Length: 434
Image (cartoon, rainbow, N blue to C red; front, side, top):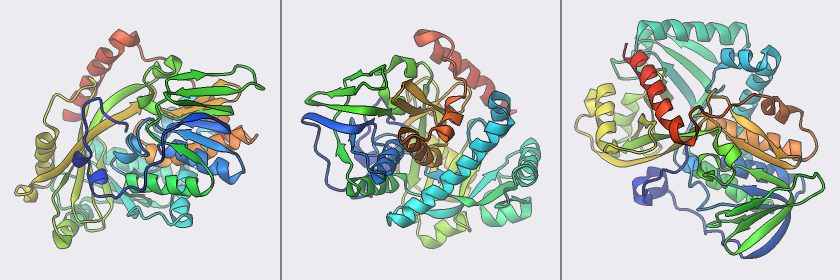
C-alpha cells in the first residue's frame, strides 16, 4: 500500500498518530557518491540497504517524503505466506520448479522478518497467528483444498483447518463458516517495523536522505558506467541503482509504471475498546481475512482497538466517506460494536500487476527494481531487499527466479487501462456477492 493522492494528514493514520518518529534525516544537499543508490524508503528499500551495508557496501537512500510514507506505514500489517497470484497460477506462469523456489523464498521471508525483529530489537507489536476465513460453502471447499495442498504438496505443517464450531470460539462473528489457521504467519505495526529497519540501516552506515524526491534518473546502460539520481538540491552517483518506489514512482520510469495499477484501499480503527472487550472479538489474537475478491481483514491492535480494512477503489479516487463505510462493514462482522466510534481512518494504494505476481528485474546491467507486491508486501518486501542485495553482490540466481516472470503492460494504455480494470473488478465483485 502506498500513499493516496488526496491529503492524508498524520492525524488520520493510526500508526503515525500513535508512534513517536525518530529525528528526521536531512534532505540531500550537494553531490554524493556511493556504491549503491536506492530510491524509496519503504521496507524493500531499507531491507536492501541494510543487507548491502552489512556486506560492506556504501549505500545512499533517497526518500521523497519520510520513511514509511507509502505502504510500509499504512498497511494492515498482516505477515502471510505466499503470493497474491497463488501457487497454481505461478506454476502456469513459470513452471513447477520455479514456483516451488518462490514458495520456499516466501517462507524464508517470514523467517527473515522475525529474525530482523529479534536481531535489531524492533518494537513493532509482532503477534503470531493468521486466519483465512470463508463466508460461503464454496469458500469452505477452497480452504479445505488449500490446507490439503499445503500439507501434501509443500509439506507446510503450520496450517490447519478450523471447523465452524471452533471458529466461533476464535472470532466472535456469525458471518464466517470455516477457517484456515497458520501459526507461522502473523501481524505487526508496519510503521514501527519500517522505522526499526531504518534505524538498523543507519547504524550499519547507510546514508538516508528524507524529503528528497528524485526528479530525474540517468541510468547507465554499460555495466562499467555509473547511474545518477537527481534531486532538487543534489545528486547521488553510484555504480549500482535500486528503484523501490512502487506505485509512488509516478512516471519517473515509464516502462515500470505501465506494469502497475495503483488500487486505493482503506483502513480504520475503533477507539480503545479495553483489553477484555477486544480479546473477546478475536480470542487467539490472530489477524483475520476473508477470501472474497474484495475482502475484509481485521486484527486487534496492541492498545486494544479493532483495526479493520475492507473496501477498495479501482478508479484511483476515494468517492466515499471511508470512516462511515468501514464502520458499516465492521458492524456487519461484529454487530456488538454498534456503539463504537471510528477514531482513525486512512487510505493508500496497493501496487498490483496484471498477473498479481511480483515484478522484479533490471533496467540495465546494474540497475534493479522491485515492485508489484500486490497486497503481500509485508513479507515479500523484506526478502526482496535481501535478494537484490545478493544480486548486487554477485549471486543473482535467486533474484533471477523472479526476474524470469513475464509481465505485460496493463491493457488499454494510460487512458483506458483504469476503466478496463474497473469493469473487470465489478465482475469479480459480482462473483463475491453471488
